[in-house]
Every structure is written in structure tokens, then in C-alpha cells.
Image 1 (cartoon, rainbow, N blue to C red):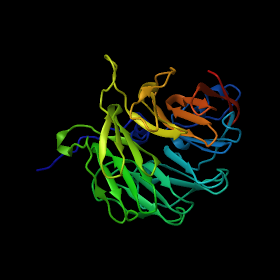
Image 2: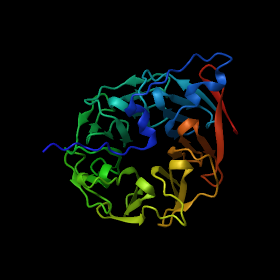
Image 3: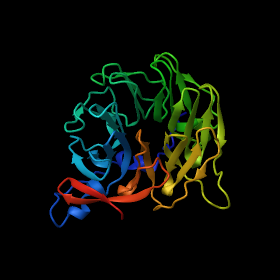
Image 4: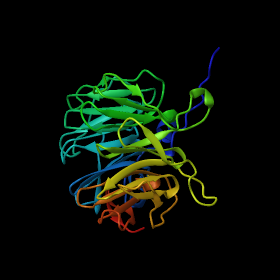
Length: 350
């Protein structure tokens, strides 16, 4: 009997790449500066190293700021593939991952980006580096890639199951997790040589036809971790082996619809999660209670959140959404990037 697989749910941030929609970036003339697509397209992830910041997004967009997000310039990525994740080891060395097996590397803060060869054409949604040499990338069709040489070569460490992986997190060179489709959670204790499927409290079978996806992992310490997913579900582990639901699907008051949680980060004593329709949740590190952040923004999908060591933080999302904080999230300002010259822009209040 032939089983036809139902198209898996993917959040809005992944749809452009999978649908094959390609947008060209028009030349930035005086008449088109305010419409430059690089500043208006979907932003998928953001990274901070000291005063330096990077945003990646649709159609190979990479934006860079040298002054804590006050001004931005377009860096040449050399690709037109969507870039879903970005991570920097220091102010010089960084990687970006995206559609069709794309992984980019820079050794000079992004002045030059180079394509690293990968053994896959699958979309890469998760990226994690423990050092300048040791890294992992995960994506569609059970793809798990590993490098021990800074990405000069990547080898497959896939689990062997046809499941979409959305995120990967390693605490040590040996111990790590991947999460994704059907609510599945896998753990390795040998650096990815083998993977053990852990018991997930929200896992469903392929034949069930249900969607129970997990999109992001967060391990603020070696003793506790969280996973975030579809319909606002949040899982927690205190030992890395057992997971429990701390926020159920639809756990919102009244008739409010639950929204998917797509990214998470932490700073100081608080952890954060962001997602669909402007959803921003906050919780104390030692608390399982998540509450909406006390501010309102435009109801667009929020795809990424990150904090620096001194309280600088960003939230990025669709349609050029950019929020900025300088006090660890106590106050946020919604910004827009207004073009000032070809490939350059300045942050301002909308």
C-alpha cells in the first residue's frame, strides 16, 4: 500500500524558500531607497557580538551593524537562498544556514562570506557551534550535519528517520539534542555518532495526521532546558532525559487563540519566547509560569530573538520587523530600518 505523506506544517518563516518564490532586489535609486527589499523582507534570525550585530533573512539577505543596531549595511552573501539561522563564535568568525543545504562562513565579520560545501540539498533550519571548529546543522528529512573543522567539511550524522528537524543544541561536545516534526526529541551522548529518541509528552505518529511540531531549544544551564513549539506549547527538562509540559496548547485565557512559538533566548534572570502574531512571552529562569510581555507590537510573525552580554537585545520578524532593547528587555522599542544610501540604512522609530 502506498502512503502519501501529508505536507508537514512549517511556520510562515520557511514558506518562501519551500514555495520557490524569488524576489529580486532592485537597484537603490533615490526614488526607491525607502522601498529597498533588504530592509523590508522577512528577517529570520539575529546575532550579537559586542557592538556588532547581524540579521539574516529572505533571498540571502545579511544586514550588519557596527554600532549596536543604530545603523545597518547590506553585506554580500553571495547567495539568493533564504537564510534561516546565523551564529558567530566571536566578532570575526560566523556561519549562516538556509535553504537547499546552504551554509555560509565568514572569517572577517561578514565583509566576505563563502559558501561551505555540504552533502545535502535539504533545508537547514537549525545551527549550533560550541567552538570555532565544532558545529552542527539540522533540517528537513532527518538531516543532521556535523563539522570538526569549522565547516570546511561537513559530514552526515542523520538519525535515519524522515522527520523535519528545526533546532539543535549541544551543551558539551558529546551531549546534545535535536527537536522537530511530530513533537520528536532526540538526544546524543556521543557527539552525534548515535541518537536516542526520547519520550516526548506531545509526540504523535505520522499516521495520526496531527501536527505537534517543536521549533526551538533553549538551555540556559546544564541542569535545565526548554523546547518551544506549535500552538504555544512549552516543554521543560531538568535532567536532559525526561520532558514535561509546562505550557499546554491553547493555555491562554478566554477565547484568545494560541500562537506558535518560533524562537527563544535568555538574559540575566529571565527567559523569552517569541512567535506568531507578535507573541512575546517572558518568564523567570526559576519559574515555569510564562506571561505575555507588557507591550504591544504589530501582529506579524516574530522569528528570532537574541541578547548580548550587556543587555542589548533584538527581536526580528516578517516584513522587516525589528525591536530593540538596551536594558535586557525591561523596555523595547519597535524600530524600522530606513534606507539612507544604496545598501545602507538607519534605525528609527516607525
